[in-house]
Each structure stands twice: as structure tokens, then as C-alpha cells.
Amino acid sequence: MPVYVVGHKSPDTDSVTAAIAYAELMKAKGEDYIPCIQGKPNPETETVLKRFGAAVPESLTDATGKKIALVDHSDLAQAPDNLSQGEVVAIVDHHKIGDVTTNNPIFFWAMPVGCTGTVLKVLYDLEGVAIKPNVAGMMMAAILSDTVNFKSPTCTDADKKAVAELKAISGVTDTDALFMEMLKAKSAVEGVPAMELLDRDYKDFDMKGKKVGVGQLELATLDQVASMRDDLYKAMQEKKAGGRHTVLLMLTDVVKEGTDLMVASDEPALIEGAFNAKLQGNSMWIEGMMSRKKQTIPNLQKAFGL
Ligand code: MG
Ligand code: MG
Ligand code: MG
Image (cartoon, rainbow, N blue to C red; front, side):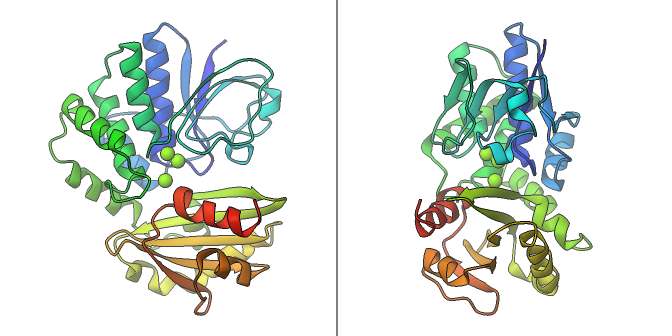
């Protein structure tokens, strides 16, 4: 019976390329692992897959009756549906440990680094398995994406070391150029429906029984969404109406290194308190905020009393 390797919902480049890279590693060890994706690749991921000649992995959204390896998450809310009707056999991740539980011992490999691609690089080295050049290129692209070209506070020395080594394996000469190519693809917002933009990089979290959703758009400049703010806010309210206490959208200016945080919440004052900022209309600028995982979520958890 094969093991299906899958990243989180609203898949980002790391969750897709990590599924591919981990499946490749296990195949090299003679195991039957199949990379999967929950849903469709985002424009950045499409660019990366095309650039390194990889096919879009097969879709998997329901775990019923399947053996599953989770990459880039361990939260039930982000995992395939009916996970308890399947069997999780491995988790490879770089986030806080989530709420997935298992009945049997599993392979659990997590490190506090900027990207699952970095965790996998360490794992490949440990297993003594050579990384194929195109797989190395995809792992490297994921690290550049997750660490925002090393600018995110989530970036560690291990991520920089992994990129240097993967660069040599992949034969890519200019990682800045690769990052800009990815940023261009990911920040192309014109003509895209607001709900699709909100969903592009979106995660739900449980905050003491309250459902809180956080989306993020990484932009070269906030001007890119200036004319779409009303529509984005409407999409946030629509999502919030689906049983959520709060929906946030991080409009992250990658060049200025800060985030304009759009807020739709039952308790806006709680969100203001979480970030020590004041809403102007339905958003507030937070200098230096780049990372949902390391900045937005921990502040929210504190504010919600977790
Ligand atoms: Mg991810
Ligand atoms: Mg990641
Ligand atoms: Mg990300």
C-alpha cells in the first residue's frame, strides 16, 4: 500500500515541493511514496514546477483508508479531510507541533528552521541519498519563498547553508533572479477574484475554540492591491460569516519589510491589542511584520489567552 505525501490546504510552494522531495527520498530507499497536493498549485508554485520540469502532483483531499505522510504542517485544520479514517505514518515539518495525533509510533522529523526544504536537505544528508538536480532546485525555491529571500525572521543559518548547497546541486546560478521570478508570479493580482487572492495563502487556526483565519499576500508594493481593498474586505467578511471569529489578511510589502494587516473580527480591539496598533478603517500598518508563523500567530495566541 503506497504512502501519500501531502502538504497543507491552500498549498504553497514548500508544501508542494516538500511532498515531491520527500517522496523522492523515500523512493530512493525503495519505498512506495506518492507526492500529492490538496487543491491546485498557486501561481508561484506553477512557475517553480515549470522551471524545474516537474508535473503537478496528483490531488488528494480525503485521507479515508490511506497511509499518509504530512509535510509542512501537523494541524488537523490544514490536513486532508477525514485524517482519522486514514493512517498518518510520517510528519516532516518546520512549524509548531499541531493537533494531529496517531495510534502508532511514526516517523516525526521537525526542526525550527525557515522551510521544510531545509529540514529535507538535512534528512537527505543523514540518509546519504543524492538529491536530483531538479529536486534540489525546487527545495531551494521553497526555501527562498518561505524565508522571503532570507529576509523573514523565520530564516536561520541552516536555511542559508541549505540554499548554498542546493544551489550547487541544482546548477542555478542566480538565486536573487529566481526569487524575483517567483515574486512576480506570486504577486500578480490583477484580474484575480478577491476570494481567490484571500485563499491563495490562507490558514485557519483554532484559538481557544474560536476559529481564526489568516491569509497573506506578499507584494512588491501595496499599490498592487490599492484598487482591490474593498473587494478583499468583502471576501474576508464572507469567509468570516462561515463560522469564524476573525479573518485577517496580511498585505506584506516585501520591499518595505512590513505588513498592512486587514482585519475582519468580532473583537477588533482584541486584534489591535495583539499587535499594539490602531486600525485606520479596516487595516493597520505593522512595521517589520513578515511572518505569519513567527509574528502574527504567536501574537494572536497571546491575545486569545493561549
Ligand atoms: Mg507552507
Ligand atoms: Mg513551509
Ligand atoms: Mg509561506
